[in-house]
Image 1: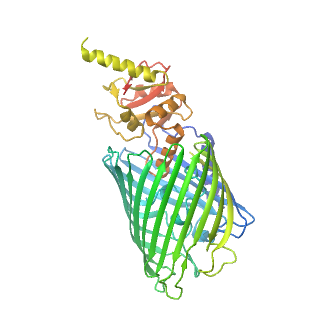
Image 2: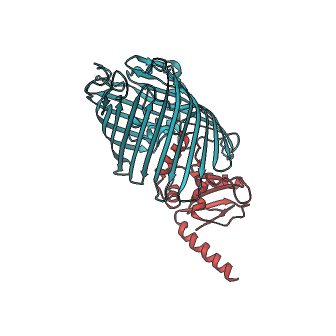
Image 3: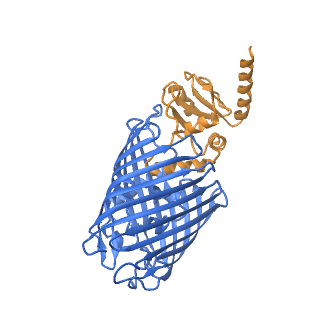
Amino acid sequence: MNKLATVLLALLAAPVIAQETNPVVADDTPAQTVTVHGYLTQAYATSNGEQILGIPTEGTTDYRRAAVLIRFTPTKKDSLVIQFAHRRLGLSPTLKFEPDVTLDWAFYERRLGENTSVRVGRLPQPMGIQNETRYVGTLLPFYRTPFNFYQEGAFTSETVDGIGVNQVIAPSSPWNAEVSAYAGGFSMVEQSENGLVQPNANKTLGTQIWLNTPISGLRLGWGGQRFDVTGTALVSDGKDSWKSDYASIEYAGSRVKVRSEYRKTRIHDADVNFESYYVYGGVNLTSRLAVHGQFDTSKLDLSERSGQGFTIPKYYQDWTAGLTYSVRPDVVLKSEYHWTKSQLLETNVLPLGAPSRAANYAIFSMSVSF
Amino acid sequence: MNLRSVSFALLLLTASFAQAAEYQVVVNSSNPINLMTKEQVRKAFMKKLAKWDTGTPMVPIDQGADSSARAAFSRTIHGKPVSAMVSYWQQQIFAGRDVPPIEKTSDAAVLALVKANPGAIGYVSGSASVEGVKLIVVQ
């Protein structure tokens, strides 16, 4: 880990210990012109079969995510948000292109009236229930968000360089909606039998719509995204286009949480279709202790792809059980166990299409935020 | 005293009894408002109301997460425990959307800020003296 990462982690640790209230300026000044927040999740992860998602059989503590978010708000209408982030994924090859500390977000936001805002810069993609907060361990039941829907490391970008608009519709109605749309570009890591490459996505258009219902805690979501990609290794000329659609449903009660999301992605010229869904349920046994369960699965359809022509029904399938203990709302301990069958094993790699193999892994982690 | 005044006095008395035991909602003494609905107070502390009717920017002031006044306020006004509200604000913060209201760790600190700021709204424990600020009736 380089010096910058060490400094980042030290910066994170100090306020976590001292933090009792949100940072504000002088006591008698109500304006909050600069706020600093952050989070850290440190894990120990071990696999009992083969290496998967960077987790080796001998275990690793090189598994963490941290970020510092700085928000400068000179007026009630204007904000500048910058987030620096650090991520380690054990022995995962996808870290090849990732520096220890990255400028994760950097965007300017302008509020236009009470219900509309515009963002410009590098901004988080509003996608599904958890993309914008996907690494905030104190908000998650497990170490990571469901792998198939959100992905991590490869074939995904959490941010877009461009512009985003957010509009709240009928905020006073029990049936109110929030609509987000964005456009721009990004780069991502692509992992295939040809190795790792870093294609660029451009002409990205995306949207996310949330419908809040009169039933407290119940909301429905729909979203879509399309982009052109250059530099992909999946087709000979390196150019392709992606299109994804997704749907979400979430119920967050005071004691029970249930959510499910479905995603369908088509990579046009490569003739690749990817379908995934997950179902999650969690129950608070006490005010601090909660039990969680999740089923996450995906299907990779290459039946239209010349030279391959098959479907992999369990590209990554994961049954997960876990416990969380909230020492405080901003300090959470987690233990989780995953029973998986997949094509994602990182040792004894077999060609795509070979039967999916089992690998079980456990993650023990501590998350703090301030 | 006319019927309207008697009704208002009764309303004030009823509402005062309801919240007296656990918390009191206060605003700056220059604020002309006397009465707010629970929904208005909830929106104020969710930062979904930007201004008072007078045009003065609204400045909600929360108490620390360990405060008993906050526990009662959160249960009554938001209908949720403090931990759920902390999670809500964590989501807002880390989605880059907003930051929570200013937090003060004592009744005295809340009262000092409410006295000093014309747009402030806060709450203090039921036993706190509210001299120098205005007590609001919450329906």
